[in-house]
Image (cartoon, rainbow, N blue to C red):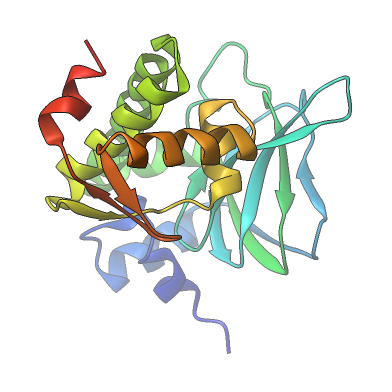
Length: 225
């Protein structure tokens, strides 16, 4: 049997909220839960965003389509992840990309009005919502910084340094597939693989399918300047 409160406890919005507080939110809001099948579209680019979505089960992707027919995965989300939080209070509150269910998924939608109501009623929820927005701003700043680099080597070096700081290890686990990494850098998989091989040849890194080991930290930092 599906446990809604347990699923919501995986979401940052409900950090430190008790079961009673979550139950009160559910009683006092007009949330809705939708089930989606594999490859079903949740929202199309340009659709109005009047609510936030919380992934309760399954996986979803945010994809950007181009006139050439190419689709690029911008973000992949799983249980507890949120989408639409930076759109719902914006003047231009429409989806900038298409949201698709990768497999069978379940999503809870909470309207703008109910978000305001819950923020007013529960300070912990308000604090968590502000934290979600702050994290999104920081992520966008990092993305802009990465895009400002001129070469794929600089982008890879910046990515490695970010993960090095997060994981506090000279051997970092890669949270993305090669395809996702290439899309993150705005390049192709062959170009990404070729540059990783070049960086290994130059003694900067070593790598496996799932890890990258830093061999020369100073030289890696020098790439960014």
